Every structure is written in structure tokens, then in C-alpha cells.
Amino acid sequence: MQREDNLKKVRGRIDISRNERMNILKKRFDKVFCHYQEYSEDTLENRLIKKALMFSHQVLQIAGISESLLSLQHTIHECLSAFSKVGDQIEVWEVKAIKHHKIFKEYDDAIRLAQMILHRYDYNITNITTAEEEYCPVFWVDMAMLYEHYVLGLLREAYGEKIHYQVHGHTGYPDFVCYSPKVVLDTKYIPRFEYGNLDTYIVRQLSGYSRDKRIFPTKPESNIPCVIIYPIEGEEENPFKKKQLEDFLNVEDRCLWSFHRIAVPLPFLDESK
Image (cartoon, rainbow, N blue to C red; front, side):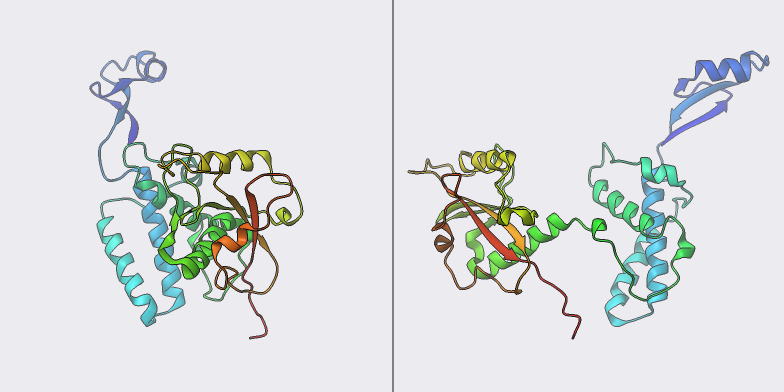
């Protein structure tokens, strides 16, 4: 953790301008103002995570004790015990300034979730006052990722392990790949694709996947079909369950060879129930 202080001996790096202003001009030659790195558990990242754990603990306290929450409450108590030597004082600007940990990259997800929890309650633990359900704006949720995982569930339900998720290629990570038949599928949370043309960058992206030697080590005899999966409003059902994947490749995009589109309806909440 980066610290700065007026010390009796040099530690780390001397802040020349501040040392001159605070010590030399005042003839305090026994002091030197330094910036230095202090290696301890009490870092900004750990303070942020502990603060988020305290917020989560307060939320569970208000929600009450139930069997489904007991294990979660126990986990939070264990985590708070592990953070006993870490402070919980952190300013709002410090929370927003933390991006990622350069050394410990596994912190990235924890930091991101902690920032979301604190942002949800406006960085004020006293705002956690009710266990009632509250409105959650859609822009707080990564809808593109949520839709991608929803479609993955439908594909796995219909075709099982034939669907490979996020295959590592030279050109990137396609959402879904099938090797029998050979197909590249990618979800795009863009409803206008029902009528509009495909964006050029999307065509290039999927074309790159279909020609990637790491994804398809054996050279195909013909162009590998590329499928765009996009959302529409409609009945909540699995369009893949009653069809083979080949059946969706009969209709080709009007502007592009070997490009196809599949509309997968969005699930919706039936308020009448």
C-alpha cells in the first residue's frame, strides 16, 4: 500500500518539493518527507472488499434468518474473520479509483462485485433499511452476458455436450461452437437484427472464428456456417429442442453466404401468477 509521511530517516522515495516546503525551509533537518510502499494486509483493495462484506452482512441481517441464507451468513462471518486485521475506512473516490490488482489478478472479480454492492446502496450502509423487493434498473445488469448464458442453457438442453462454450482461438473466443455439424454461433443482444443488416464488424468477427485453425484444426471442405442468435419478444420456449441444428441452416442471410440468423425469445415474468 502506498503511504507518505514525514520520517526521521529515508524510506522509499523522497518527495523533494514537499520535503523542501515542510522541512528544509523550516530548518527541520531531522525530518525527511517520503513516499514508500508498506506491505501489509491493510490495502485499499482489502478495505473495499471488507466494506462490501459488511454491507452484505447488514443486508442478510435485515432479510432475517432462513435455511437458504444460513450457509451464506456463515460464509460472510468466516470472510470477516479473515479480514480482522484490515480496516473498513475507505473514501468514495478511493472506491471508484480502484481498477484492478496488477499482481493478484484474482482480485478483479471481487473488486468489481464489491464496487457494485457499495454503489447499489449509494456507499451508505444506513440505506440498507428494508428487506422488500426493490426495482433494479436493467442497466445494472450485463444483459448481453445474461442472454448469452440463457441461450447456452437452451443449446445444452437440446444438444448436450455437442455445444462447446468459449473455445479458445487465435481470433478470439466464439460464444458457441459445434463440431457435428461444424457451426459457429454467437449471441448478439440486438433485437433489430430481426430486420436490419448485420454490422460489418460482426461479420468479420464470425468469419475470423470460422477460419481459425485453433478452433477448427482440420481444414473444412466448404465455408463453415456462421449463426447470429438475437432476441425477440414471444413465447418462452426452447426453439432448439424440436429441431436439429442443421435445420436452422436452410435459410441463408439475404446479403451474405453461409450466414444465418436464429431468433430466440426472451423469457418474461408472468405477473398474473
